Structures are given as structure tokens and as C-alpha cells.
Amino acid sequence: MENELKVFRAKADVTQGELADEVGVSRQTINAIERGRYDPSLELAFELARYFDCRIEELFDYDPEE
View 1: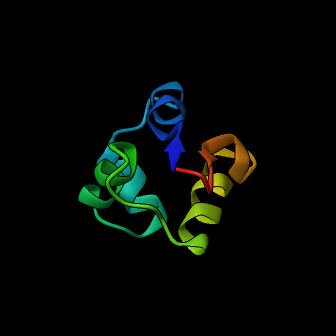
View 2: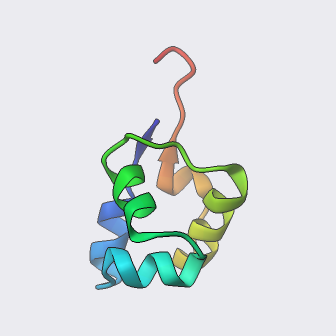
């Protein structure tokens, strides 16, 4: 799944650690999501979208063909 998490995080001027603390996960989890090595749970995706005040679809692009 492609994502724009790093872009949103940079625009908000927040570190991986700060974002992780805000949404209740480890910095390594945020790093893995940004690198495309980990797909977040639906609950975490909602938390991230809520944090950035956007829709999940703006953060994540799911293509079932990939």
C-alpha cells in the first residue's frame, strides 16, 4: 500500500517519534509504514488521519492489484 505519511509529517513539522507518541505506537512502526514495510491496522489509519485532520484516502492509496 502506498502512503503519503512522510509528506504529511514533514508538512506538520513533526518527527517520527512525536507522531508515534501522539497515536500510541513506536517510532519504528511509523518508520515501517513510511517505508511501505508495514500496513497499519484500520484503527491506526484512522488515528493517523485524525491527527492530520484528513481522510484516510489522502494518506493511504490501496490498490488490490499490487
